[in-house]
Image 1 (cartoon, rainbow, N blue to C red):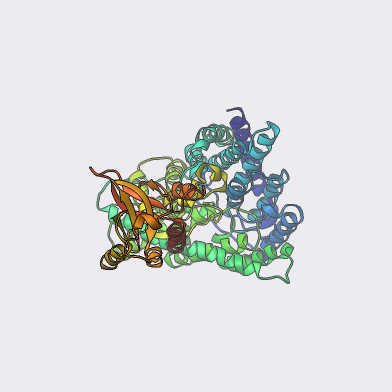
Image 2: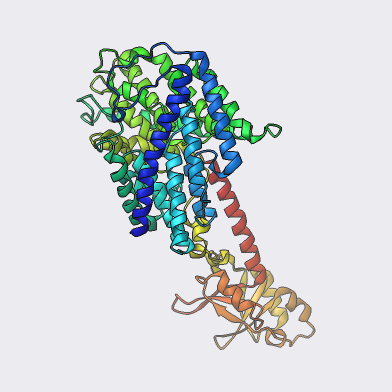
Length: 589
């Protein structure tokens, strides 16, 4: 609790510091150089009226390039771990670095992200705050002498507190800290400290904004009122799922291309990305910075005298969906500093606006649904799918927009988007499938592969049971007829040995020689339900070479096979091959 409170305090004040640092950077870089002032959210005082006004559009590339240049020298000169989106770096620290984050990273991340976003770079502020709070969690764990497990939990709590604070969504942020670490699992141990940290951070950050939701929704018709609208939300889920795949592929494709530019120092790559973003923004300034204000104008759209749809007709909205994906990929994929959550929300929001215009203005159907219905569900479904954290993102969506009236549509569309994008396409590459795949839980889940192989799946079943007094010639003839490779020898219903067909053939030297005369191999029995690992331990003890598999569930014990080291090795190799194939196909999902 104590550590959670401290982390929450840093998350709250860290969110405020980043918020005002971005505002300062915007004032003196983007607005100062170009004269362009992007719209804000209602939380920041934006009303329904907004005029772009006159500005020096040709100076936008100058602003974004300068921001990228400064950010590049800060990050690669002081803390290369601060490049990219901070949430992924914190997740990576949790899984692979025992929760250890260098002390200088939070400060570098804050300044570099503020400059990237304030100069017009397309990035979010949640990733930096998550890394700031997670870094402080790592520091607190070291200060209190905590072990690796508790340090990881402190880092997870920092992720939740940072995101919950900056988005004014404490419950969603707390849940996100447990869900975002995995693609199909939860870090349950982090939930309670994350709630404490997230609530504390929200109490501090929200106090400065009267605990107002991030977006103000003006439409009185927002909500789920008609079952027929579920058809639309299914379509929303499918469209956002497909676009989510495009977002991930584009983002990491651009990042890969920048990594191939070996002749260009890393210091200058964010400036190149910034220049490209600025060039796009000369025609489409809506892609600059956080872009939240444009969504807020769309929420005001139906009630405003100067409708945001007049500023952004459908052809511009369609272009913005794809251009925002490209701009975010260039800003962060080039090595710039910022989050991917905010751009994901905006991309999803623009997608929802496009679908609303399509259904309303072109098809003239579902007229009872407001543009806010489409935008809210689309923006949450989009990022809920690509983040692989659908439950927490759904909760955050309700907190960010101030109501639960769309909870059912949010559930439907987000889950569809999640499954459309599949396990492979996550914006957070540091995520692992589940706890069993995380180095953080390696000792808990570490279990020899042979423990998963049953004796019945490895044994040789082509054996017969013969009386030990059977002559070798008769035994060989019987084995030929039964097409078996070995015989378990019994005497008065007691298993006394095992011989192979080759041993019988080699031992024939007289008509009176019997199976008991050549059986010098002691045997033990094992159940078919026991593991191959247990069989391996018995066989390697040096006392026996083969185990007779006996089914004791029947009224009379029945020999069903034999197992030796050769059978275990064959089953082990087959299991490895199967796992490799399943992993390959799982990656394609």
